[in-house]
Length: 142
Image 1: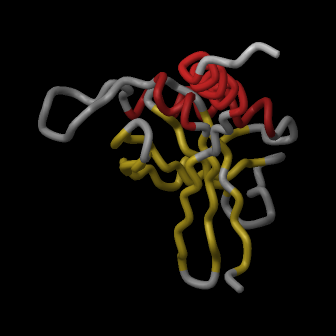
Image 2 (image 1 turned 180 degrees about the horizontal axis):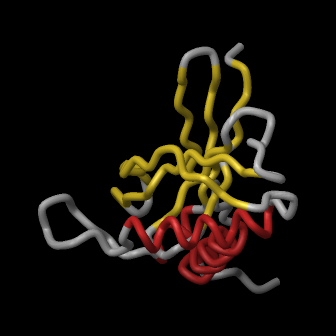
C-alpha cells in the first residue's frame, strides 16, 4: 500500500474546501416603525461594483442613473405599474466581511396604475454602484 504524502493530502483538502466553499449573502435589516426591511445582497455582486469613499471624488453611480436603473427594473418586476414614483433615496454603506465597505442607494418607490397609487405600502430596493437592483422585503416587525 502506498503512503500518501502529507503535503499532497493537505493540498487536496484545500482544493476540496475551496470547491465546497459556500458564499452567503450579506443580509441588511433595518427597523422602521413597526416594520422590518430585509435586503439580501450577494457578496460577489457587491464586489463587482466600484469602491467609493465619501469625500474622495464623485459617487460612481449618479442619482439620476440609479433612478433610471430602478425604473427599468421596476417596470419589469411590476408590469401593472404605468409609472414609477420615487419617494426617497438614501446613500448608505454596506459592510461585508469579505469585501469591505461598499455603498448603495436605498430607494423607496410606489407604482401608479391608471393614475392611482399601488394601493399598498411603498416598495423598497437597493441599487448597487454597478447598477444592480436588489428588491427589499418589508414585513411587520415581530
